[in-house]
Structure formats: structure tokens, C-alpha cells
Image (cartoon, rainbow, N blue to C red; front, side):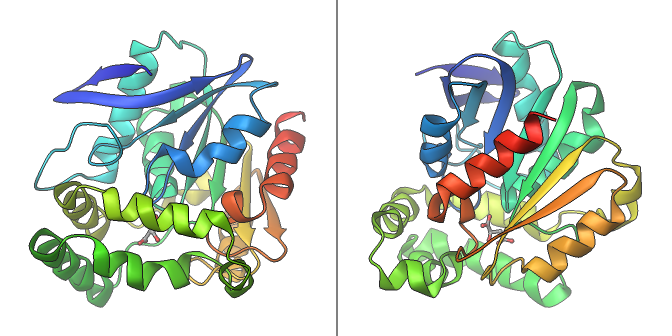
Length: 263
Ligand code: MLT
């Protein structure tokens, strides 16, 4: 499995297939494995690159603060290291979407199209930001168990949990394996991420917004509003899915992506 040098360490990533480069960037506090169904279902058409963001999976853990800007720069460095010169399709889920906004703003020349899954454009309220700082302190004392407990019911639709879908337990194990220092750094980074709402009208690449019908973290109405504020955006709601739409309804998400990229 390849590693790429970034500013101060190495980023691990998985690469599959050939064709247009499509970068799949995971949410918090997960790793590249959340894209397993896309890595399997889309590799016949695209060159897929699924990195572990710094602090997660097998990538470098840098304690302190990992901003969304730094993570976006990491992806640009990864593309350089992987020899990918042509503009890419950047697909990010939730925190991966926060990174996608920063990639679009800071590395426009490297971007062909955007796919935003279950994410937000606004920054945190003071209360949410304070909770994230609290989480950063607590996870380093207690480990990630409490995060798995509180996040799993928010990540998946009630029906996905009730059906005992294997993806739920797999996701719980990914959270439990995550490095507390990496979780803390990303949590602090999300707390101070900028509100990109004022920039939406200037993000001019073709964009697909995907949202699970029952997403409790970034609900469909909010994502529909983002699409309306962007010049070239299309919104697709995934029936029956929650926040983890690509894992919960992979066939529907893969066909929305394939259809968007065939245009
Ligand atoms: C995620 O799925 O990445 C998180 O829900 C993002 C967040 O906490 O805002």
C-alpha cells in the first residue's frame, strides 16, 4: 500500500483502477476504509485514491492542531507524489467535505469537479466549537470509546442500525482503533474551520451534492441550500440513508457519482 510524503510525515493511501482521478476523502473520526464500496464499485471507470487523512488510519499523527487547510494541502502533496498532474475529482464526506472546500479554494488548478457527501458549508457555532475542544481533551484522557458510543447513532439511519448492517460494527471498530491524538487534532481543526458560505457562489466547477435522506448531522434541506448557492451544482438525496450514505446505500451513491462524472 503506498505512502506519500507530505509536509511533516507520510500519508497512507489506497489506489485502485484507471481513468479520471477521483480522490475519496473520509469523515471524522474514520479512515479510507469507509469508501470500500466505492473502491470496489467504481474502479472499472476511475483511478481511485483513498487517503487516510493525517491523524487517521496509517497516516502520520501530528498532535496539537490539524486544520482543514493543512489537510487540503496534504492532498495536493499526495497528488504530486503520486504523479497525478491532471485536475482531479475531489469527493469528501463530512469532515472530508470541509477539506474539499479548502482544496477548491487553495488548489483550484488541481480541481476538475467536486463531490460533497453529507457535509456543511457553515463554520461551527461557539457552542459546537467549545464541544469539539472538550472532546479533544477528553479523548486523550479516556480514548475513543465514548465517541463511538455517541457518534454511531448519529452516523447511520435508524433502519441501518436496526438491520445490524455489518458496516455499523466495522465503523465502530475503526473509531475505536483511531489514535486519540489524531482525533483531538482534527477536532480542534474542525472547531476553527472557516465558514465557506460567502465563497460558494465563486466555486465554479461542476459539483454534485449527495445527502442521505435521514442525515442527522448535515440534513438534506441544508445541503439543498448549498447546491442552490453554487453556480454549477446538482443535489441528489439518497433514500433510506443517514450520514454515511456511501456505506449505507453504495449502489445508489455509486450510480449518482458515475452519472455525474459521465456528463
Ligand atoms: C464527520 O462525519 O466527519 C463529522 O460528523 C463531521 C463533524 O463533526 O462536523
